[in-house]
Length: 362
Image 1 (spheres, one colour):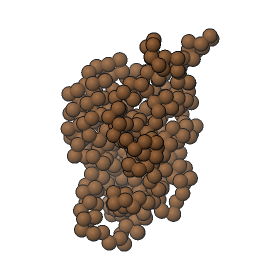
Image 2 (cartoon, rainbow, N blue to C red):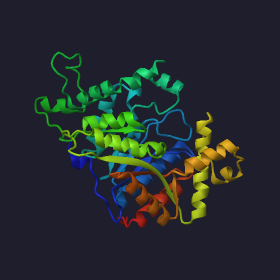
Image 3 (spheres, rainbow, N blue to C red):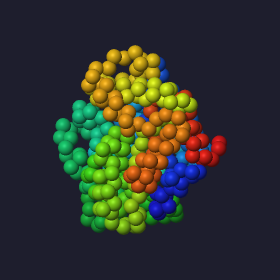
Image 4 (cartoon, one colour):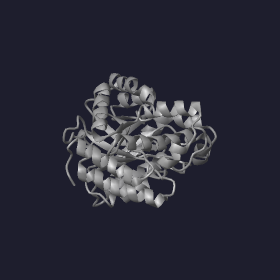
């Protein structure tokens, strides 16, 4: 693993590398199969147009988000792409045994050598009851509090370097480095780079202290973006992975052929968030349903606040918004998530953004 497997190269006129965050959203009247087919199409589009990486986020118990199993989806996408980096944005470490994650991502690395990222988060990616069911415990705070220890354990499984006398010394994550020590063994030189994900200061500080790359969830925690990135850079200590900080931010952005249509699409996505935040998660509604919905004053306030952090409009407007955000935050990479009811709208958005920056043509 080298810094070259982490750092991207800006393409076209983009100020920094552009990447894709896929929530595998399911719209009303559509199926999870439809959403996953869109993910295949989008990963191919992203690869052909010069986007740097393609990440899938872990969520649970949300009808409108079909990404509960990132490793399974990434294996599917690996079979349909050839070059683009694939990864988790992220796997929620407290939900899983570190050995299981090491095995899953070792398998992915064997499927797609040299292009797999392992992004890790400490939040549950769901509500408390679902997290309790996933973890088979009611003591949820322990998972978050133990995150640094879980991370250290996972790293040792990936590197197969538990010290002598450790209770896991004779346990090996396979596929993994242990195969190189077997008679006749040959092991890939690649190991999935670990990224830490966050929406506050905890993971920013930890990523800096460990010299790891950091991904911040600007798309749902915009007020914390600059403080978290500042904390990451201030905390950064050079490591075998990176000699300087590298931070990407997740950005909600949607481009359409005209501004009015962009407003219609983001209103539908915002209504979906209203329902999620008020305990009524469902499929992403159509723009027509959102236009007919009677928002309460409190809901309207939420929608206005939410959409103020969604960069949307014509391709030129989105390009300007992304450029301004990158300048304001100093982000080393922009990872774009475009949420909309239909897969066609999402695909078109990424095409328009690629065109606006003069990225490679398919």
